[in-house]
Length: 485
Image (cartoon, rainbow, N blue to C red; front, side, top):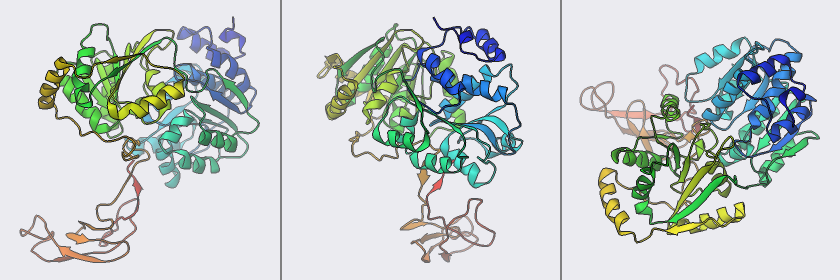
């Protein structure tokens, strides 16, 4: 049987692995590490939880240690792109653990936090940077980061990048990378658009495929419960009350839905917290820390967390709402049954989600065992109480829902309140059209009405916005889409 010592890794890396108790590589590690160490491009297809982070981190660290050179100022030798903040942090932590005896530097770049510490970390150059596309684009625009020194480019969870709309930023980032570089491309599934992107980025790549596309982990006990939409919350509380549920993740389709489910569970006496793209980085970190510490029994999350949460011993995954994308089902339930353990995945399905269920069963090539809890009188009575504890969210057909609803803040864009109609200007409320002036009545604190004193007419001049804010004495109104982070 293959051992890490058989792969030719540097001794400091083997020592770090021994410190963590790792002796035998997983299948993808055993196949990918020798290929990456030879400097070849790689296309890796593997589900979450198969150990693919080490499959690229270990040979990258070996290469950087063998050829030591300083990273360029504001630059880095290795760039790893990740779709979410949590996954970026997880990858960076693994790099740091494996490089414990190498003296190599690792930094993370993602939204939701201040720019200053990230700029200072990049200033002198970094060996490995793990970044989300949106915040990295911001740093490139501000010239606080450069890509000219990148020797190794890793694109992780490529299919989730596609789901979140990151393909265009990835292409822009790749266009600024040196042509002479090694490319590593990892994805759990390979839809057509991702295959096209891989063809653009990779040069004569070797391929490693551990599991067939869109298959589910065999150790997961999957089941489906048919239930009315308004009775899902009491059903969830009933299942979570079972002592066999030690630590669970509950997936919802919307951010508001995640908050309301968490609020209801807390009111029902079940320790819970929510995590999604609208939460600040501090809120997300605190919720995840409480979940890891066992202080929270149920973590309610949107799909943004489906691959960004690496927590051991998750006994159950609940699909409170079925995902819009069939492949997301695989990633959701992949949060349990990790590292050789068994797990349970329970999905709820109301009548409006039948088409989503059909797509999931077709993509995973299976028929999920089902139970019927419709017209359950006990759930009906509990649902009436649930509406008082936390009002139910109005159901929205997922096929008609705003596709930006679950986009992370690194990519999310906001419309200016003045765009296309009425809005607030610096002096008052005035109509704003694209490139036109408008007048409105001022409403402010001083003098009853009108900011700056008295009641009067305020003019709002059209402007294109400024990354650093408007100049003094000039009233500018932003009409473009701009990054929040």
